[in-house]
Length: 278
Image (cartoon, rainbow, N blue to C red; front, side, top):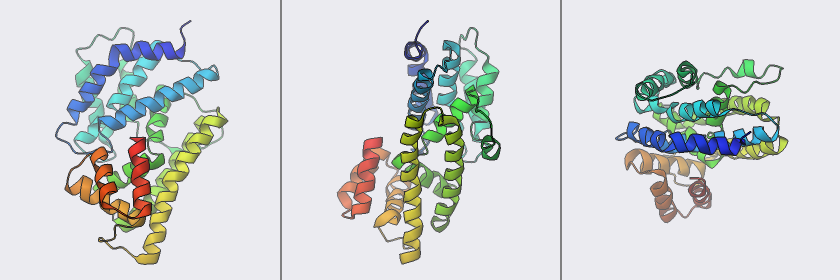
């Protein structure tokens, strides 16, 4: 029997290049670094790591199941090229369906892929947190892999960008994000409990994201909201607004420019870590 690592390589050899190209084409002319093809590529890396961790516990998936996951990953947020709303999964489904209609997929149930894509952002955390052993399905594997990209320094950036683009006021984003983040991580904990070591590493990434928005709240209480303040977490947010929103830079250029301009330790430490993560 082939190993999970070998099955992943087989699937990537068949699909990865064309899926990356298609995802890149979908986002041409759309400046959304938090959810573009780079996000989809990171989600696939999280998915691969999750599959390999599960394999250590003898929780195995066949090649068709891995193939369906790879395809689902690279289309799940493509709908955000057209809308920033939470129902973007419906558009992602349509984009995936258009792409796959002329492809040869022997033995693959396409409806499973389309359903996973459409519902990837509809996570009922209250149900997921109920007692019971979580089941690793195409849907849950996609959802967890997607959630993992909301953690760490990259998660702090991604949350900030999308909440600001959804016109949530800077002074309100921390509370809104912290509530969502906590729900996401509690959901993940149920699924990742099979591997205490892996869960611990993700818990550390969760705390990085959580602490950034707690720091932002604390800064507001101490100094208020100052759009000219380029220090601390508010300075990070203002660099996002200036470099990503106004100047339309991508993440690598944003990090380089922020590090050249800022002399604030919090800001430079943030962008140094962000540069490493991307």
